[in-house]
Length: 273
Image (cartoon, helix red, strand yellow):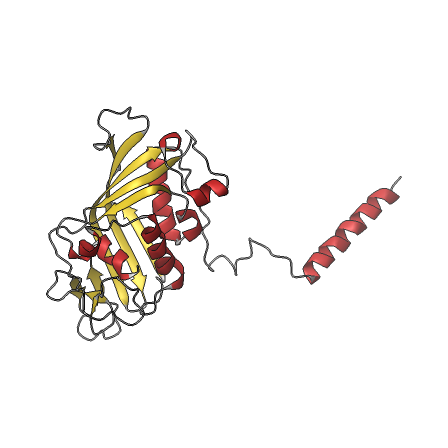
């Protein structure tokens, strides 16, 4: 009666030996814990605040795949008032395709003139404010809401850190009233009352500072046709001629200090478009 138990133990021991010889992946290996990824699961976009928290998670974790799933097909980004980084897009709106291109470059691949971010932190400095969507004032607030977030964004790049502060406004829509992008429909997404999406994002960061983007006669090397050419500082970072972009100089005796630039979120996005 004891032989079956011995056989089972022997089989388990053999299986463990084979897995070890094959280099079995162990997700709890401490040597892997610091190599990217997030131990915190993404928020569930089942509410107005949930979709905005998922947006935050995507930026913090540079999660491009998930970022593709949070915008409607008719999504628009609206640049801050007075932010000349958005001049090129006043007559030609910033769409979901622009948004995803920027995210791919910033999170993963970089651009011909700028490597991707090395790390990103995005914090809400106040509680999210959830209100009636002014674009749908007579509609049932069950389907449309506006969320105001006060943000502190720090994007660490190889040549310094870009910091964004101020308010942003998200117009979000419940899934059963959303226009789902065709590629998401092909992947099985459908109009669903248990999921929310971002339909519009209005930037309000650093409205008092105009961050100049010059449409030069010739494009910068590697710039896409029709895109504005950003002026560059000596360190290669985008800046505007006579702009209000604040560049923090290294303290005396600290030549290796990382410069900190305060920019609008719109300027950051254009730089990586």
